[in-house]
Image (cartoon, rainbow, N blue to C red; front, side, top):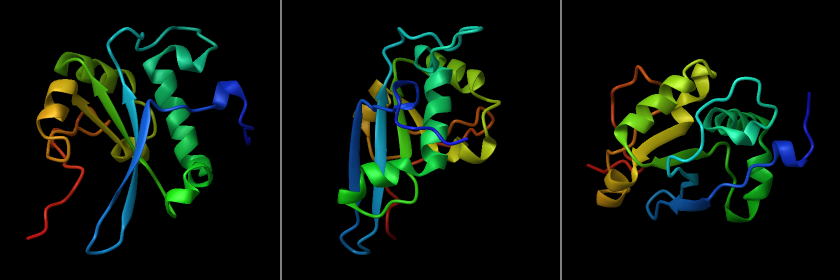
Length: 147
């Protein structure tokens, strides 16, 4: 089933940016969602996918797998994927979100990074980001350091 760009399938991130390597010329697309803890994680029987954090993640999964983002951001480069940066208020909130979305496609967990606002402000590009996989205890950097 393909979806048109109608409101229920429309993704509007809070921010977007591209990081490019001067050495390699490689570019990476990042979308940003800011969560201040006011949205519900899940709501049983809700038809509005945008009404919950889980619903947003489902929409981002569809956006990623459909490839529509490549058209949207084509003027900035040729992107095969994006990484969604999800910034929120607390470690507990991250844990609760990761639990709420644990059954979403495992192969897409690596395209999501979660951090608290405090951690992301302290070292935005560094190893402060968690994947969507609740069992993954590693912290990831947005930029790998060259040795």
